[in-house]
Length: 311
Image 1: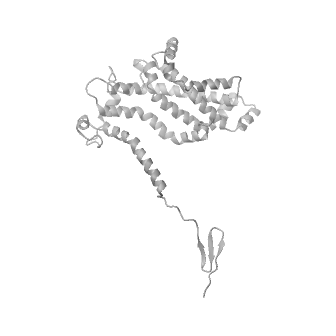
Image 2: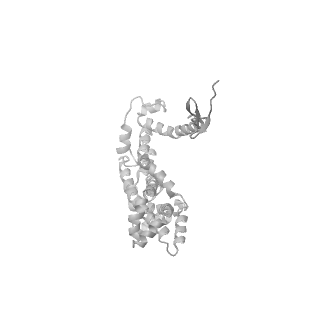
Image 3: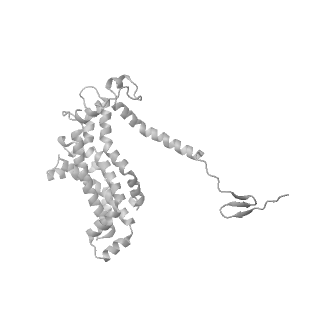
C-alpha cells in the first residue's frame, strides 16, 4: 500500500511524491451579481442621458417633411446636411439672417481673454494667499469666497452702472470684464487649495536661494500646476461659452454670443419652426465645451484628485 506524504510549502503549494501541485486562490468570476447590477445601472443611465442627443443628431440630418410625418426616433431615410449649413450661415436670428457664425466669433472673442485673465489673476491670488501671507490675507480670502456665493442676478444692476460709467456697456469688453470678475472667486479657491497641497520645502528652498515672488511663481509653481490649470480652463470655458445672461445684458445687439443667437433662432417668429435647423444649431453651440472636456478630461480628474477641492 502506497502512502502519500504532504506538507505545506511556500506559495500555497502542496508537495507530494508525484510532484508539486499548485493550490492558489480561485479566480473570481467576472460576471458577479454585484457587477451585473452596477453595470446595468450605468448602462441604463448612459442611455437615459445619451438618448436626447441621439434624437437631436438624427433630427438635424432629416428634412422637414420627414420630421413631420416620420418617426422621431428613426434614423433619416435620406441623410442631408442642409440644416447644419443653414444653422451656421443663413438662419435668421431676429432681423439678421447670418446664422450662428457671427455669434461663434463673438463667443471666441469673449471666452479667450476672459479665461486667460481670470485664470492668471486667480493663480497669482492663490499663490500669494498660501506662500506670501500679508496682513489681512484671511479677510481678503473670506471676501472672495463670499463673493462666489452671491447670485449673479443681484449684481446685474450695479454692473450695468459700472460698465456704463466706464463707457464699455454694449460691447464685448463689458462681457469680458464681468466674466473675469465672477470667475476669480471660485478659481482663487481652487488655486489656493492646490498650492497648499504642494511641498512647502520647495518654496522655502527657493527663498533661501534668493528667488523672488515672480521667479518662484513662474519657474517652480507653474510647471507643477498643469492639472489645476486644466481644471480651471474647463470650468471657465464651459461657464463662459454656455452663458446667456451676461451676453444678453451686456453685449449689445451687434455682439451677441452664440448662446443668445441660438435662442433667437429657436424662438424666431418667422414661419413655422424648423426643428432640424434648431437641433443642428444647438449641437453646434455646445460643440466647443464638449471638445475641450473630452480632450482634457483625464487631466481634469487628476487636478481634482491632486487637491483642487481639498480644504
